[in-house]
View: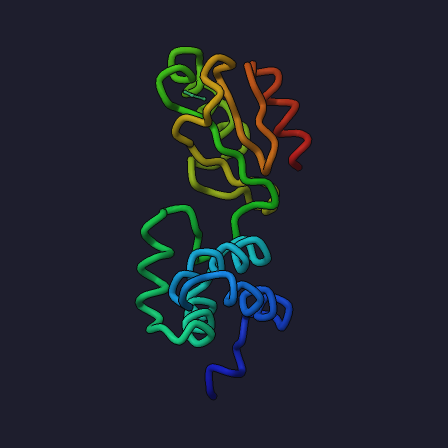
Length: 162
Ligand code: FES
């Protein structure tokens, strides 16, 4: 069986990636935006997607894989949860209970940092400074930044992500 039978990029994703090409100095420069397009659609970037991105950009798959793994942001084995929650553990948040929030959320979700709940609703991650230290502790969930989060707030957020 050939790999074309297992395409994971949809026509829409390919179109989005190709639409970026004129905006960048060369195809290689489109690698990271292309990876983001796939990640936004699939909530992860499986190896087959890496191969297909490389084909579009006329690169070796290893070049795309290098870029992807450099950031440690992209999951490859399985999609992250429908909500990806980042709990800040940098100094201000750490001093104001960020680590306890992280432990609490993980305990309530029965997962460890970096893992996804069984129902696929949420992935809990630790984050470095989210840029709102004066409102520590902070959680970024999707595009929404939650400030001065208490344990009760965290419980409410967790319920809303289910
Ligand atoms: S230390 Fe958490 S937002 Fe800056």
